[in-house]
Image (cartoon, rainbow over all chains, first blue to last red; front, side, top):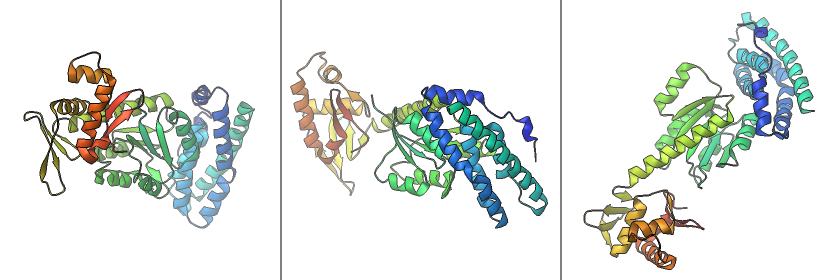
Length: 121
Length: 234
């Protein structure tokens, strides 16, 4: 990993507040959360599958897309993981880096999903 | 008040949802997920501004930007890149290519709208200034000789026979292209009167439209608002 992921704050609270201020009923946040959960559900499984097929370009494109999804919901640490996956040099020497990023990504994803579930009720 | 027309090219679903929520109320927004779809839309939708993601499933924003600039109808349309990329080299490349602005995601809703409004307003002023002096559509407008000619496809000129009042009306609209003028404003500029019979104004404009031929379609009636010489035929 290039930079310790734990150095990044997990959530951008300002971003979440902005989403709530756009729609105080919480409808926008719920809509985005639904999309987030759907996009993240099989994200890392797909990445592992693409890795096994040596489709590294697909992994980068997927990571780019999911980085946007994460940051739009203020999930900073998860966004950073996707950024590192997006720019990873997929050499055999970096296989363990990829595996670590996927592992931490799954952990952060689960934390993010739980947080959003708590906020949206 | 006129709603600016925005074409947004974005494939990521949370960004799509945010753009829809933030922009659809204040703008005439068309949101498409691919460059191919954007090209199809441009056949019948003339945006005042394009919001363009850099990396899309079917290509990159720079190629599409070149496509826009090559089309006469959209070469002057402001383009704002809306992207995750914060690399300074990419930003410089975007401005060198002619982008009006560059906004990194995640974007702030208020800032996005402020930038859209600023660029659309400036673009409208430039367009108006570009067309005001002499030429509008197929019309050649000569303020010195007080004559208007229609230019055909072979470059031949044909005099458009306008009355002095009709010429003044056209001159008034040519000085305010893209802006809605109330009947009161028209009365002031053309007849130097603050009050004037609406029917008289309407009659003169109707006559002017007929004499302008197909170009008369650019002179639009705005319900409860007046008249507008638009840059769009439709």
